[in-house]
Amino acid sequence: METIIENKIELNPDQWMVRHRDYLIAMARRKLPEDNIEDIIQDTFLAALNSASGFRGRSSERVWLTSILNHKIMDHYRMVYSNKGKILHSAISISEYPTWYEWEGSSSDINSSDITDCLNANELHLVLDSGINLLGSREQQVLRMKIKGCSTDAICQTLDINKINVWVALSRARKKMKSYLAENW
Image (cartoon, rainbow, N blue to C red):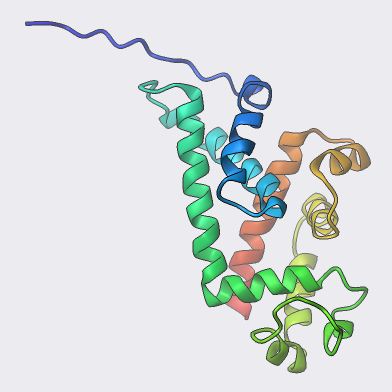
């Protein structure tokens, strides 16, 4: 009887950005619009950090991270093609206007068919504002900067924090906002 000895691979999260980021971005570019890639990569690294204890070492780090990336991409498209996802995506897109009221009737190329009714009811802006105001101060800062289109590097420099802190704050803010919107809107 043969005994197979597994060579267990150890994770090295400190090196993920250096070793795997470019590869993961190349993989994501094949499946995602450019403006979603950074967020999905951040979500991938955060999910990997959170599930590192479950890594069995049967594959390389890159294969494992790519698998997580593929699941994040599937989650992204499930969200985008759901009605709530369409409305949330539109809400975040229009939040770049000085006030959300100004979006109504603007000549924007955003698909307005699902969101106009909500804006007319003055419900969307109230719920988004109240949800963001319930976040912790760091989560509010990071989310507001991300909504305005700031890159992760710009957020790091402005708030004097590292990328992992940005990813964690964004992940927490998104989860809290998703939960808040599901409960209150």
